[in-house]
Length: 234
Image 1 (tube, rainbow, N blue to C red):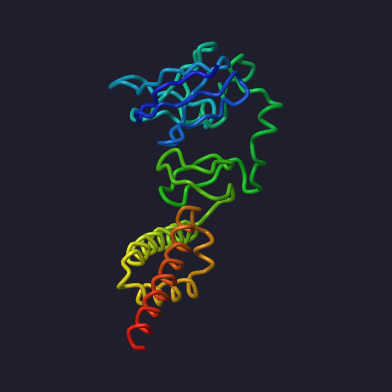
Image 2 (image 1 turned 180 degrees about the horizontal axis):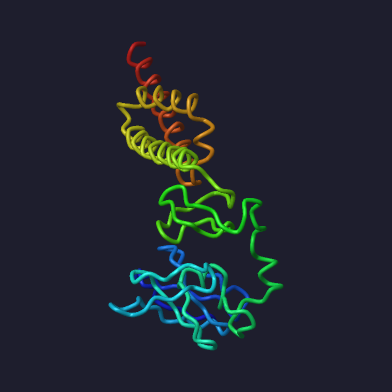
């Protein structure tokens, strides 16, 4: 039975069984969790004032005082916690805690043709070419290929538009529940579906259900209002 540990963000996280998946991150805060071969969480800490820095054997960069580190229980080499979690083990060649080469080939995406490293378009720091998340600014990317700042801005703009669309759908759903506003809600729903049909399909299932429910309610209430009006006239 897999163990449950508490992440630094306060979330209770269920660890994977055995050593089949040591590339592990907290599903809530997305920070890396360093696991040993036996799926034991390594304690992490920051360098204290005056402590000499070290070089992470995985990313080959110096460890700063504000970065979380873990120590390999076998070779006692200091690593970035994020680097350990990213590759799934120790970065020292031949160490028992190092990830299996065969497993790494199966689960790691292919190296980018741009080289072993790339520059984060947001913070400008150098990260691994296969990284889809910057360990410095925590920006996530849709691809391992190098991106420009304009690419990241376009991605953020699309996400902001979808978030705004979700809020509009919630408002329309609430308005559709008020019978007297049904004709207005019907017009707004029709305009929304005609203009944003493709974007609605990209929303989470719950938001799509609310969108179609809002349209359906406004149609039903508008029809009932029309029937009531005709009966009152004739």
